Amino acid sequence: MRRPGCKLSRSLLLRLELKSNPRLLSVVRAAVKSLTEVSGFSAHGCRSVTRAVDEALSNIMRHSYGGLLGEPITLYFRRIQRRFDAGTDCGLEVQLWDHGVKFDPTSAPVRQLKELRPGGLGLHFIRQAVDTIEYRRVGRTNRLRLIKYLADHKSQPDC
Image 1 (tube, rainbow, N blue to C red):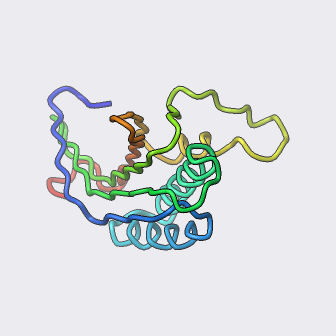
Image 2: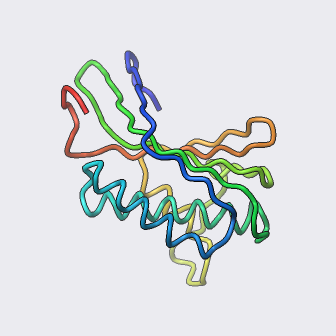
């Protein structure tokens, strides 16, 4: 959600192309952890972003591609800066693109935490981990956009 008078600027930090395969999740987790560390996130922020990306990727592999191996997934990581009248928020934007079944995680119901059973908490973890979650379907491509802002860098003149 943008504030009035808010301008966004972005610069690409990293692009990852992979094939759907759960064995690659650990590789992506390591890359995300390193990227968030060098981007200035706290230990908690690094874990939050890494968890959100891991859950989103797992959902793409499991649900969008139905467990099929070798299907394309592209991740884009951008530095994002949100300027508004009171200052600047700096953060990280992650976009996950796939060509699987259409599914809008922003409108999906979240399972109640008090329901004690395995699975179904991925969307809950993603929603708690990031500041913004957006979904679009462009042609045959699902585009999930996650944004996490650096809490300690708010109102800084430059990110």
